Amino acid sequence: MNECCSVADLRQYTLHPGQRDTLIDLFDEHFVEGQEVCGMHIAGQFRDLDDPDRFVWLRGFRSLDARAEALKAFYYGPTWRAHAEAANATMLDSDNALLLEPIHLGPDYPQVSSPRTAVAPNTVVGGMVHPADAGFEEHFRQEMLPVLGELGISPLAIFRSLRVPNNFPALPLRDDTVLVWLARFADDSAYGS
Image 1 (cartoon, rainbow, N blue to C red):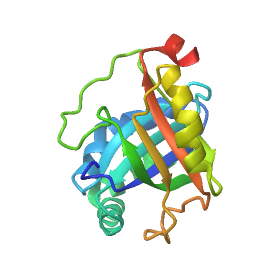
Image 2 (image 1 turned 90 degrees about the horizontal axis):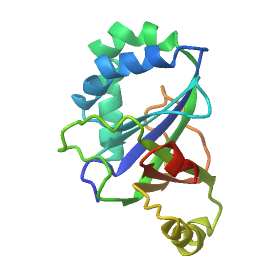
Image 3 (image 1 turned 90 degrees about the vertical axis):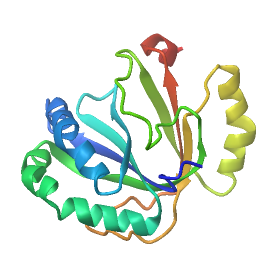
Image 4 (image 1 turned 30 degrees about the horizontal axis):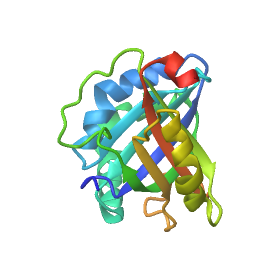
């Protein structure tokens, strides 16, 4: 298992119309490195292809305790203080967040030690957030994973809800039980087929 990410936050923001690129610029210029120096691993930033006013991102932590320490360091630190007003001005809702634990991180899942490289411009990362009542994880493994494999889809990562109290309540979390999977596709047509 990836040493960094025994805990992950999947955050899905609803933005004011036309503000996604502004927020992405803030992330790229300030927040990715600003969070990583505090002990977080930014595993991905995603543009929702179906909603131009939605921004999705995933960050990982070594442990639950490390999550609390890293979030405190970032959100009470100089980078967030300097750019919080500009970031918050882009958002209508930032509370759509899930606390997750990985059950599978594939070999192509971004590693902490890997250099941050540009992704091919047409690459698509697709995924699903499934409600996961009792037995769904096993159903996913036994029934859905083989179908994905037949379609040539190999998950980059599979996560399930981490059912523990939120140890950084300044950032609310959804109280849903889910299973999340992510996969990389070469382009829109591969994703759509």
